Length: 144
Image 1: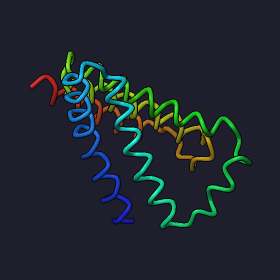
Image 2: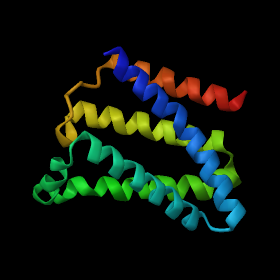
Image 3: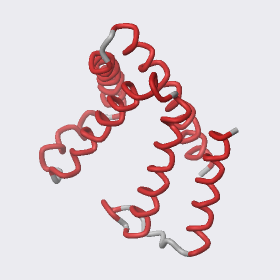
């Protein structure tokens, strides 16, 4: 289980870096949308290489998947476009702060209801208090 935590820690460390880098690129070239296109092209190449190494047979199963599962791509595009556009005006810290609050709310709902096949983890008072403390901690760091 520790390796999962480390992978997700690395992913979390990368989100603000992604936001700052893509925001800077968008500002430099004058187009957040074009910066997002570059990001997605590079991400696509990297992901294709990984899929080929991990086992390309899974790609053949995609047409049979429920179509609503493919909306995740729209959410990724929305995140990248919004953070690339907003961060230069609002600050990377502020932008990521609101992303984190949104993630806490969304994750709690997904876990509570077991949405999209997720493992059910009910939102107890203790868990809600923990999420609130996390949100408060993120807010305090932004106010400092």
